[in-house]
Length: 73
Image (tube, rainbow, N blue to C red; front, side, top):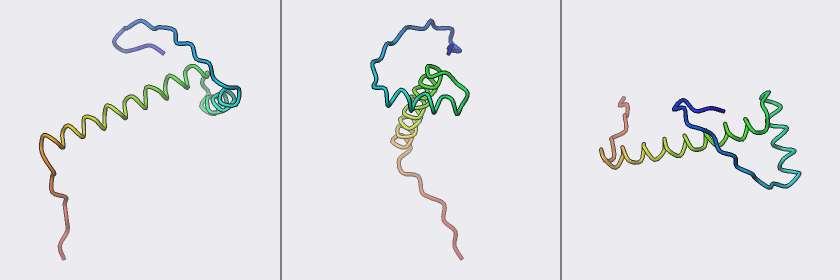
């Protein structure tokens, strides 16, 4: 899976048990992906989520607690 920034890739070797590999194969197959692509997409998604939450936290620190919208009757 390439990067939009044009960076090169590096090999990462993992040792995982057979049960976990079977589950990864099943998840990847459901999405029509190889195990490698499935794992890379999952890691990228988790990384994005962490960076997004960190950015939200920093924004909240900068602006303070914003009042929530309420409706009155």
